[in-house]
Length: 373
Image (cartoon, rainbow, N blue to C red; front, side):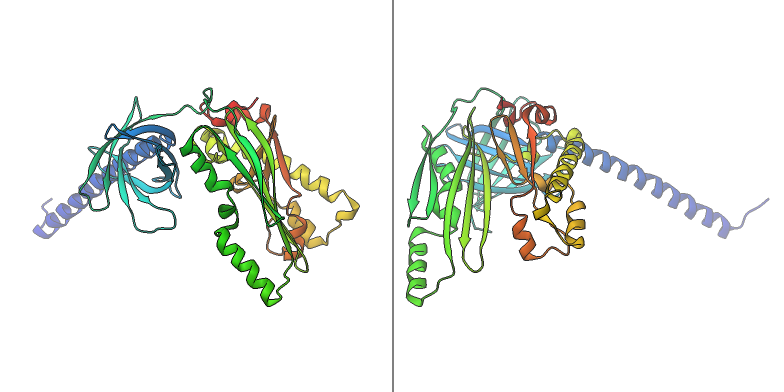
């Protein structure tokens, strides 16, 4: 059976389209495979490092997961200064030499002050480069990962109190290293806790007194939860007493050997995260039932249902404190019908407790929290 020229042309177009489709499919699968491989490498690089720039500028750096699989955030500082610089970046899509590209940002700044290019490999060392904003200076980078579970060289800190204006008591943390002290100061100083300088705060107080503004008595107090094994956990509580009374608190757990905060979610093995959250869910539900069983805590049906529908999510680990043989995660209650008044009642009611025996099977082997007894 003979075919016309038009039919032959049609078959040729069909075969060509089929070939293009097959090639594109293979290309997409190859790209997906490449992407998955390097995202896995990126996730494996999360952690704390020590090293130097150009062989003579010692630095300490932490890498943490970003908002997407291919993004990363972090902080680093020079050991001679202790002033942190933020890092934000992503995987550079290069088939030959994949790397992490990181922008260096000073606090409260949006313009990069420098850049890091780090090889997407961490055995036995992390190699890369740092270059300045204009690209005129290039310094080689060499770092090694710190094993957080290892014996700390700074076991504990000296914690004293300092009170401002009678009602504002903050912790003064001292360790035998100037750079670490500078790092710790950013978490616990009066300026950091109040988000303003002492001079501007005093001026604000004087102006309120002059204007006859009596919005309520404010105070700050702190609790030292844990100070051993190179870990420091402090909770700072802020109260306002008056017509619009409220209180809140913030807990910080710091590695005394690096000055970096310990984010609980980063310490959990990824493959065990869902099991950890499931355990937290059961514990949270027990706390809710215990709260509702107290007659004085009677709620209307809407608020009661809102409590019963709470879930222990990754965000439930954002606020946590470390104690001798357990950690406490502060679950923040939230639902659509939650009023401001009821929210104040729930502020510190729902603490989810994990003993260290329960917690450790979920932790990464090199986790800083493996130091807990």
